[in-house]
Amino acid sequence: MKISRMDLADTGSPMGLVTKILSVERDLPIPVPIEELARQLDIERIAPLETEGFEGGLVTDDVRSTGFILVNRAAPSGRRRFTIGHELGHFLIVSHQPVEAGKFLCSRADMAKWSTEQGDRYARMEAEANEFSGLILIPPPALKKFIPKGDPTLAHVPLVAKHFDVSKEAAARAYARYHPEQLAIVVIKDGIVRRAHKGPMFPWITVPYGKPVPRASSFYGKDLRQRVASELSSIIAEHWVELKHGQRAELFEQIYPQQDGFALLMLWLEVEEPEEVDDDRTSSQRFRDQQARWR
Ligand SMILES: [Zn+2]
Image 1 (cartoon, rainbow, N blue to C red):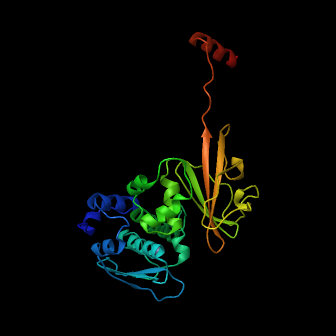
Image 2: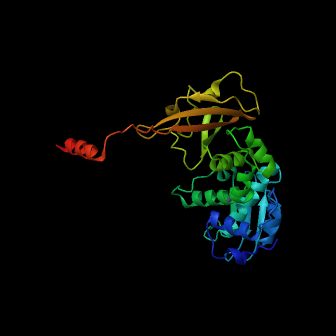
Image 3: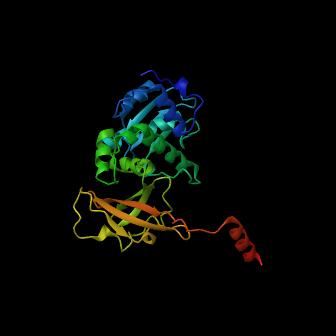
């Protein structure tokens, strides 16, 4: 690797940093060697974290001359790699300042903060570190090449997770964001909506976090099997989303039950394009009709 922190000096956003790293490291292997990359970017050591209840930590000084990353070694590989990416994000985004000077400590709940629009500075910092980690471990150009052509399906998510060596949720988030169709993937625990990862075009999801999955959902179907993506089924779009006035759309659901009461639910929205109105009027007729409306 030839990237150095000098290359990143003018960049402070997760996307900016990742774009720069990828432009220097054009042949970055997949799965991304995150520990090697961290060392290349002045992380001196990656050591086990012993503090109960935390996933990761970063010890550094005010000027970030060097850093130590601490990681919960008991976590599965995908999550551990995500944590290292997250701590590397805190290290590289110089505006991030820990609550306790020189030491970041990050919990699992921190790793689940995704909204960079949250007002709270601390939550925004965690969301940016997650954003960085997600982008560097699943570089969008590599993901776009990997997503098979055709209809989206949650059956792809474990393949993405395996290919990039990341958790299924990180894979699901990237899949929903970069798939060419309009997708959202909802994370469910014990029937409760925890959070959702959406593509850029997907509308607002009206089911609040912390509330049960809508009763009409195929989530309550009897024939679901663990770690098998269900058949796609259609649901009235308004159970999940608010459409624009006059917009018509079909919404499909698919469920992927996981362990311990977790499940992923994919929403695939197909918006119907408005039909062209037959209009044989001449332009002068149209003008007269328009004038008539104003009288
Ligand atoms: Zn953090």
